[in-house]
Amino acid sequence: MNVSSGTTVPANRRTATIALACAGVFVAYLPVVTVAVSLPAIQRALGASTAQLAWVSDAFVLPVAALILTAGVFADVHGRKKVYQVGLALCAVGALVALSANSVQGVWLGQALSGAGAAALLPVTLALISQAVPDPRERGKYIGLWTTCMMAAMAGPPLIAGVILEHVGWRWIFLLPVPVALVTMVVAARLLSESRVSAGRRLDWPGQLTAAVAITALIYGVIEGGAESFTHPRSYVALLVAVVSAAAFVVVESRSAAPMLDLTLFRSPAFTAATLAAMISFLGLIGFFFVLSLYFGVVQQLTTLESGVRMVLVNLVSMLLGLAMGRIMRRVTPRTLITVGLLVAAAALVSLTTVGVDTSFLSVAWRLVLLGLGLGLAFPSITGSAVASVPPRQAGMAAAGNNAFRQVGGALGPALMGALLTVQGVGALPARLADAGLTGERARDITAVADAGGLGAVAQLDLGPDTALALGAVNEAFLAGLRLCLSVSAVLLVLAAVATAVLLRRRNPATSASGPATSASGPGGPATPGAALAGTGAAG
Image (cartoon, rainbow, N blue to C red; front, side):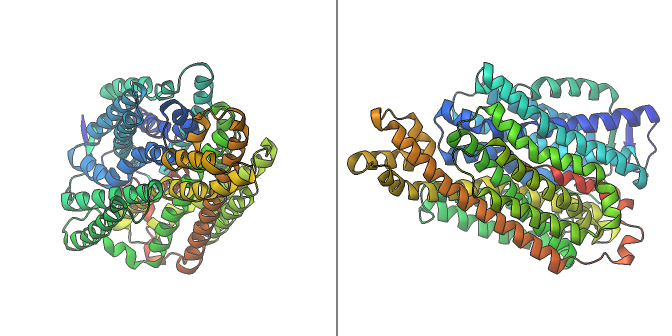
């Protein structure tokens, strides 16, 4: 059965559609934190460098950032059920490819396929809820359910990954999405109705191509700059390509009759503030999770389960706070919530710069709880502020654009933080080795291994009686890099808070009278205040 936008959906179909939308976002977000907590195990098994590990994370996020806008338009034009099924299939195939990989490049491929699937599922699942629940006031409740499923995918599975790695190999962490995706595909084939809203919608291939090239070249240039040098031809040529492609994207979109991103949105200071806050905060946050996972695995030598218990605290606190955010957001302005939340999160990151090799669980836990509190205050208001700052007819595009820039920040986070960690950590290693009494040829050999394969590669060396001294020096060098990453992340969150405080003002009454809640779904999903909660995910 085909339905178009605005058609009333029967009650039984509505329930099935909402359930499938929630299942879809659960599948889409399964790899995010699950893979993050497993990075040390993947590094040990495949001998991956820090730069290669950054690609394990970015191989997933890059397709999401590059394809999410086009996927929403494609679904509107050609059918949401088709795109939903393709997204699930890509997630399942990607997980199988990563599961069977014998090299880090195979994991990259699997993650990229899963990321393409997530890019299809994220806008489509929100659009399905918008189609099933036309009443914007009622829709917010189901957007909250959608968000809960997204958070569940980032809270429970990391602990499951820890249990898996306690008993079997690292590759089996990729198994969970396969049966969930396949079962959901079978159910969707029977229960999900096809829907589309093609009026005025058209694919923007020039915009898609230039955006994809710009994002990919930027991430590649940053990662290669950290692994080699930013003066290396691979790095600066890639960054130059990114600049040229970004300029071409602006030109193409400004001249397009049906742009994938309407650049006139940025005439609104509030939209610009919310988008900057989303991008910068996700850059700092996802980069933080990347280096934190390595700290737990490389420095503290924790198991994946122990790492997962610690990292899940951030999402758990954000999720619990989200239950009360509806009432809080009715009483406190978005400007205040975002600014205060980002400053609290920045304070949490600064407090983490004091952690060391033997820092206890409780000492780390209160800092992570504080971080989750800050993010829980800020993120629900970011997307809501973006869509509330523009006329209702642009609300769907505003939500989609805000989400796309958030994903760009999420992709840039591991790349930038991985580069900083490598440059600072390897740069500090000779001095730390000297402090430990290792000098001369032995120190140069250790530094060369770290320079080629990252600090984690030193743990694979057989240094005889010098092993303990070398690992102690590596830990101290890693902590130097970690402190730099945390400091940069904190500064980025403060900048996002300042941009919010300066640019974000009360919504225009003319805009909010009908409100973005009245908008149908655009490529980013329904433009309701509840859709803001889509931004609460740490990995984006």
